[in-house]
Image 1 (spheres, rainbow, N blue to C red):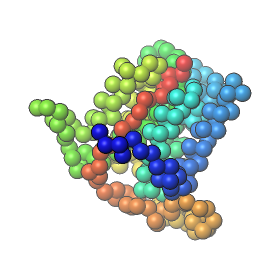
Image 2 (image 1 turned 90 degrees about the vertical axis):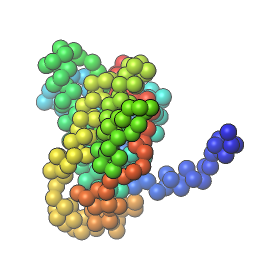
Image 3 (image 1 turned 120 degrees about the vertical axis):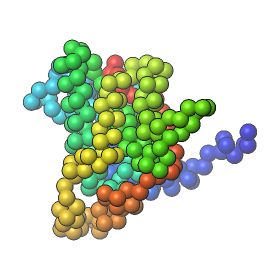
Image 4 (image 1 turned 180 degrees about the vertical axis):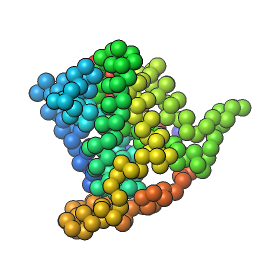
Length: 260
């Protein structure tokens, strides 16, 4: 095996970190900061986690905070490493403002609410979940749908597997190999990702005309470094080109590590 395989270039890592767009930086910073704060402030983890039977009008905030909180350092690092490149690509394609609106709103609310309804109404359970892996599988599923358009299948021996099933296979494998992960929580995230990848829920983002007006009025591109404008995205808001690149591989999911 070539020795270059083991080489680590800190300059490349530094360059990559400095190129991260604004919302990606902010969300990763909040995730790491909340984990660090939860060490001395022990009750913070329970305050932020999604506990189905604790959801009420006064605790709806949990639907937005649970992806930001993690059980421990290993849980944190795997999710951050998996989430960062996926979130960076999403922001480059959709813009900073839409990314901020989605990941502080419906991308936590909808899968969190669906998980709560299924846990309480169908399974009669109260399993606590936390962790950004729900976002990891949301983004993986969205990427899988784009890749499926260019490469509908991949082969394993004589079998042809639909490309869009890759996140589901990964969820299943992780549920067997990694203890205390939330199979249901990951499925809820993946389900929303498929809907996004199929362009069924693009209405969750305000019209581009409104976003452009906000950006121009506040001069966000001029004032905020690493800001990605709606007008300067990589591919275009609703015309994302199919990709032939390999779907990023998610490390260990983090649900029950997504709870105890």
